Image 1 (cartoon, rainbow, N blue to C red):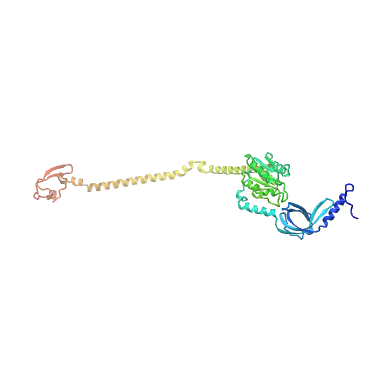
Image 2 (image 1 turned 180 degrees about the horizontal axis):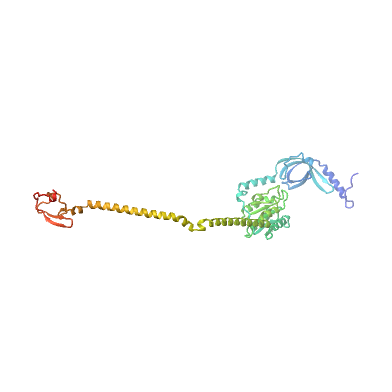
Length: 413
């Protein structure tokens, strides 16, 4: 017997409505659909996810039992464009509608992922992701800028872990939407505000993970270009290992989680104190070792005879010096004696060869008035004025011409 129509006076029980819905839905049977995987999670061997039609902005949930999953391609993942054979199922107890998947195949890269990959390639070609553009983080930032959602776990994780590592660290936090249509605009505005603050040394953008679709604002081109144009180092802490939004590529440092960002940006005070203590210990050890070496070296120098008894140098060389002085005196005397003998010999030779010696023996030198020597009678014609040079003086004379020969004086001719 068919159920009576529901009226105000005779309404259907919820269970009856649910049963009718389940029956109507199950009569639809299986159907092939096309869409993009925007969520893919595995639990207990089963897959729970969502398919989205980008053109119609429609989304349905689906489930894949482990027995079916074993027959599907192993590389299925979030962002893939697929066709699936599904059967709608209505769960009466929970009042929810889901699609049970019996087959699923790739039909190409999903629209979102395809656009994202094209944008990634374009920005990489411009050099926005180049490692040479990455800036080093400050060792100890004076103030940290934080962009995150209000009252989010990401904010709590960053603040708590940073303050545990360095209690005096300061933050300037700007809250922004971290998902939805306005997320990219608000995050970019917050980044520009923090970059303009001269007291902010590093910026952290933090979010506690999420599915592929929720992370799309962090791949917005305008946001990426904003980050590439700031002067303050930026850390991306989106907290999702499976996906890499473009913000991760352009950031100066990618942190796996907000907690990891705090550890990467803020040094641990206890570790730094331990390093300082170790450095001081090494310095003290090296200085002590150096001083010890120099003390030993000075002691060795002081123990040498030249420093312990400086007169030793003179004592050792005194006899040798005396011998050299005596030898020098002896050589000097000999050289003087030889010089005297040689000088006398030269003086004797000079006197023997000197014209004065000849004149002293009684000879003379006759010169004409113009000073030329008279060498023959022809040089002194009659009446020629002559100068006769003797050993002690010179006398004048007048030539009378050629004289007759006379006997030689003293036997000389």
